[in-house]
Image (tube, rainbow, N blue to C red):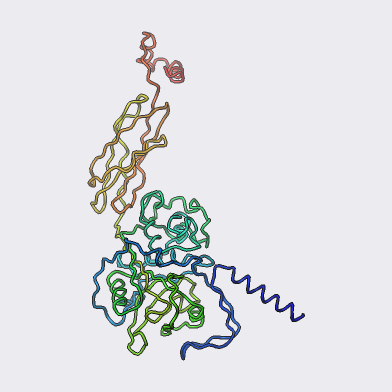
Length: 452
């Protein structure tokens, strides 16, 4: 093959690689970050980052909140090994989609469930696809979650009960909506009984900690120690990506390397803990979980020196609400089972909450309308709702309730009601027939058909 042809082929490959939504690393020679970091020659691999990095000036908002006091923390702490138990979940692989923000948000919910339930043994795997497909407003560009987003927006819309939050607080298991590496998969692809598996969250917030400093580290440590793992942004480099490919020991760490501040962050991870070390330049490192699969780092985790890649400039926390059980199925609605068009009728139902918390009721009238959420009411309180129908028909009324954590019951058994046309019968014979229909079964059918 001619030399000119070889050059053209290599140039074409380079152009193709630059068009992907990934960072592509081409190693030309041996490099060394420290005594434990050796790179091989001529190796190429790809890992996805945010196609649209988070521009800091555009995202710092007034809703940044920090409800945790800065406290004294130990020199070493890690939720991956706290009291001999692992309170984290295994690292996942986001694939060829810039959904690190979604994976980071989902990961900290998973850990908070284990922590709040005091069950490190829980096998919990929540769906990242649910956020991409059912919560399009969470992305930086509506419906384009593979281009980028923030963990806070993911959590905000998971908790939101409006249309943009899919009318409920919570996310669902991976088994109900497996990951597709796509933001075009329709929300309808989730399992039919998805609402029965909602995992609600109690609160969330983002904290713009800023550049690394002893005060910034104390803030981050206080959040992690008092609450749980947090999501954090960083500005990754080729050296960082290389490091995780070759370093698989829990004692390895990515060192602090001076880099230019771009006023942006292009990747999101989870910080699970830290280790102070006065022999290191910046005094220690963060212990983190990534979303690039288990072959990167040590089983998908990695350590990074304080301040490396600007990690911790932006952080996000979440809290999970312990739910001992959903509200009991409400009783079958009580009310008339027949009536006239345009007349208002009262129907009632009641339900009990296992935690004795207040609950909301929603009556479905069977005609495409409902009462909307009514309440809150005390557990066990009988609730009434009023409705009228405008067309002839048979309608099935049913009731559902939810508690203050947005955790819903099953639907009640339906009450069937018949709404005939309103007519006043004045002819004596028809009056007699209507009062003695059991004597004329054939005429009874005719009268019902004619609605006389």
